[in-house]
Image 1: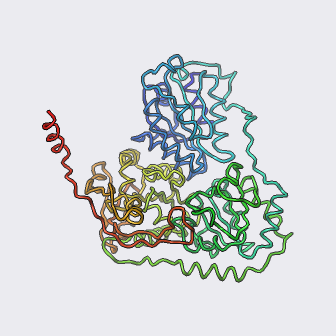
Image 2: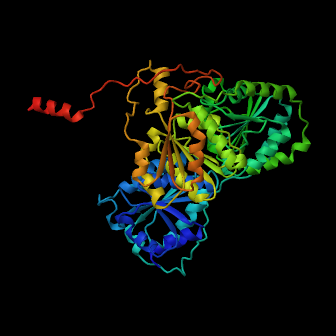
Image 3: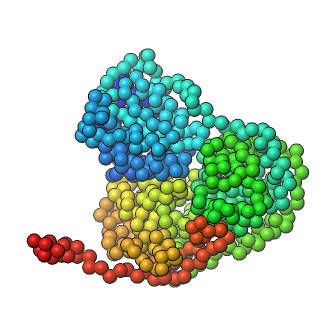
Length: 590
């Protein structure tokens, strides 16, 4: 068997049906073998989009996503997407082509040190030097990517290894692997679990902070039972959105810089904080010294490196969230809980204070209004939103959705958290739709983020992937614009995008249906048409550029919200006829 054929067979042995990629010289043998394979390959129009699509596929399905690129620039174009997956613990297998082994280190055409580049942004990476290594490397890569703290694995595949042959009888597929240096701890220590339960029993104001680890561990049902049984309110991180039903009476919503008042105040007033599968990023904690000042902290995480890294921890528990919660549930009958009625009354008061007004009828459209109408339309089409997936880009559009769009199921809200990657939302939506073809996939993006991967309109057209793209069109880089207005004296520097392109015409040039929404009374009708069309669709929503969310200042206390004043766009007056300017300059110099 040739190496290229072995790669395809090994992928199929792992249950892979779909891969995302872009061919090139160093991967020609692989793509030649793919020609006669029934493995589905989605040709994205940029390698970064292939990585994001594989990531979206992984987050929606819970299985590893796979992306492929050639060597050199193909590999470097994957980097942003793989770094995004690494930051959010998403299982992605990235296969990059490489020059023949005899040329490695000679600066051959399209050679790059892919191992060195990918090392800090993957759980592990391999460079295969002989075809007989392929079965074991592929099997090990999937094992590493999908167990313990999940994350991406990179495989560098030289061209000659793809064409060389080996005896499959001696190296069968799938291979059996033993990884002696990789034994993730999944069961929490029973004494630590007992200590945690005793501390919870003594608490009067407990709060759960659920992170993305709850979703990755498929522990949402255990979390729901745990919270309901002990009557503990639940806040989530951005990555934990969907880990706990947000319409539940115990839900506090998202915590942190762009979180809800209820979540932030509850954490600040808690006497025990139970953090599950979260890493206490700066966006959640704000000022570390003032974070949960009265609370004893229980931290449950599968990665021991995260415990104590950012905040003090009183009771650490290393283990898989699902297993630990199950073991904690077994001890509930052994503890006597204190009455929490006063605490729950306080929680309800905080939640009532956090209810936003969303029914604006202004023009341009307020983002809150669009989010409200979107959710109502989706509820008409899909009760409880069980068959709906929202993907977002990064920036204000992301925060409007995270703050106001309530979700009740895991893997139904997909966003770039740790790296904050603009351009993520659209290709991630492609991957999510292919992972869950029977679900409605709505991509919410800003105009800036959409332009970073707008070429993937060709992909959804050619493969007829019915993703609905909703562009929050304010012709600014909204989040940077908001920060400049708040913290830089309203000096709006390089955040105005101008009037190009016309997004409707852009979509139509690809053969995709598109429409523009100017008025609030148009939202529902046009959304229904787009979502029920069962084909790719783009909606350009003209929103108010001066509308901004309240937020906690960077490094500030999470209870000290700043409410931005309304600041209209103030584009700097610049002569954009650059060629004319430089012609005159060159003439003077000569």
